[in-house]
Length: 459
Image (cartoon, rainbow, N blue to C red; front, side, top):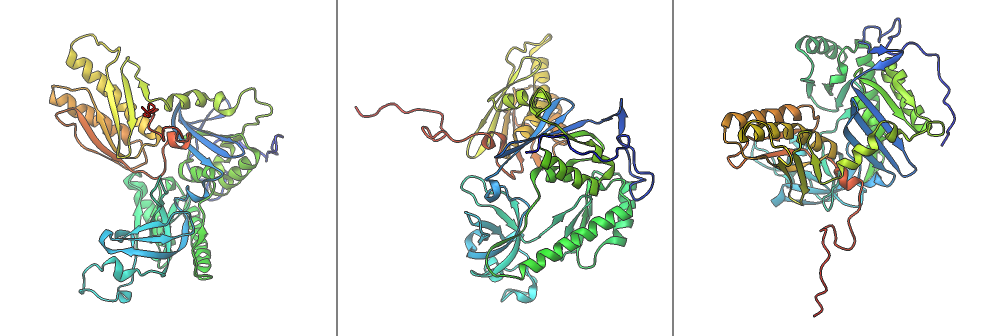
């Protein structure tokens, strides 16, 4: 790794847009004492076998990502493959697809694309069965939507999409959409632009990052994605066996593409090669933010990047089973094969007025912290939260609303049900990859992850 100082191009004040060109109308960030001001900070720590990325809101760690050098076979979400159908299971309405990874991936009936003229039989207008659409040995184009987890293989779709900075291209589709996070005026403006630059025969989904983007920027993004799709199609026609056709970029570049906007005050990277790669990417797609990509030289800095920004200590706390609340209460988080259970306790929180008010305030505080912990620990699947019992129905509804509001900041899809009479909340959070604990640990070889050691039964 090159530990020397990077060569800096001519700099302009942080947040200042170019005087002319397509970016002239883009919103610019604020600055204070020559430094960009923003709500978020991204820290990237690179080691020979691992890359870790921490997202901080203010000084609080809100998300953490880990990429291992050996993850090519497991961290494949978004990759596009030429796959071969191994077998079709009509009773499961699924097919197992060989995509060249150690475990076959699964393609469910709802994710299959087909041409009605190619369906062998079936009633007119009725949805064909999966065995009518797919057959063993058939070659298909598919994309991974969920990484393999544990004994489960990756999940696939034939509805391929290629994400860009401002739009997502959906090849050979009529799909069209604009992010609901944008206001109505901006959605109308973007729709007029997209109607002009939309490629024939392909669908487009406009991302939140397109806010303020010019027609030139959107057109360039679309052209690049169409060219990329052409390369994928050409590669797909060059063989018959399973093959990787498109790989998502390095995790740092991928997160930059998904996340970076004017609310980020900086992206700090402690590896010079990755810094150059990320800065070049940002300079190409968002030149006004290129100055916010900074090199953290570990040879000259007194502390590692994670210690400098207090990530290390917060990460250690995120691995604990117990989480303490500011008022003295606590959460206990336990994960099982089927679901994750979170128990809310008052602990040292004895309140000042009456029991109902103490419990209500403790549960409100817990709802906010539960949402943060789910995001930080990347907990997915079924989740059951055992709030402390509240007698007043209005209090239960307020806690439920507070939980939903806190989860709204999480970009991962969630579904929350009302608090039951027992004080339980059932919810789901989409699981895309393994959680924080799994990514930073290995299963104990002695107890096989059960946390117990059996007595000697040889009596």
